[in-house]
Image 1 (cartoon, rainbow, N blue to C red):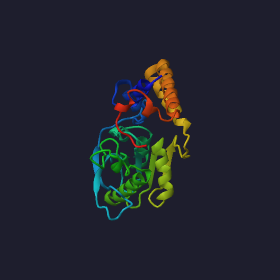
Image 2: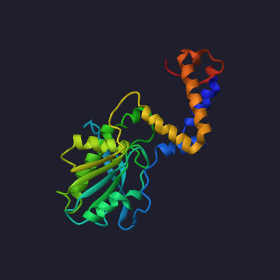
Image 3: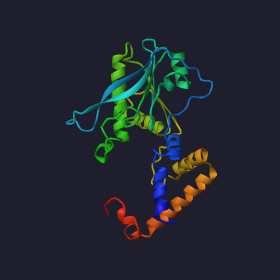
Image 4: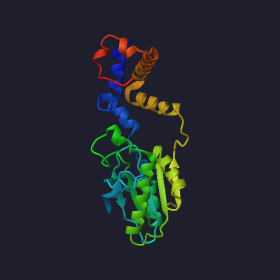
Length: 258
């Protein structure tokens, strides 16, 4: 294996190219509603709320617009507020149109929201994804976004000042709702976290198991085997040390920092 394999692998992993795009979407797509879920389009709206770019710096007055979806179909003043928290995907109206949370809102006369995570979908705080801008893509900032959202909505919605607030999230978003309940217990009544990876660790091999399943699902076993082989080749090349400096053709690659 040589540099060509590594470059092909990098190209494969970029989400803008063919099969890799399908795999990337599989890993970072919005969860799906269970089959047979009830769906409604009445009183559903796509809305926006202003958020601080940096909640940790009171001197920074820059703001941006966060997208969310709302369904007030079943709300009765004083009823609970259910918030489906978005993760690393683009949100849609689907989760305020049906599913378990929709059914709970219907049963308990609640207001239903679905928030979109900063830097995903249409919720773009900055004009580009430079490293300088990506420093605002943190869980801490996302939690602060959610806190501001809850404080604003419980004040705006008629009869909601004392409403119970319930957060629902899966995967990374499940971690968010769990962390939120610990950091902002005064803003939330309960949290439902599904498949939430709460244990942070450097060697997160379980995530690669999910990646492997996605590659096999989209590309098949042969694709998975070749991808595994390419990764092994890349690891061996990196282990050689100064490969990029000495390998023929590597001099044409963009400059990089040692």
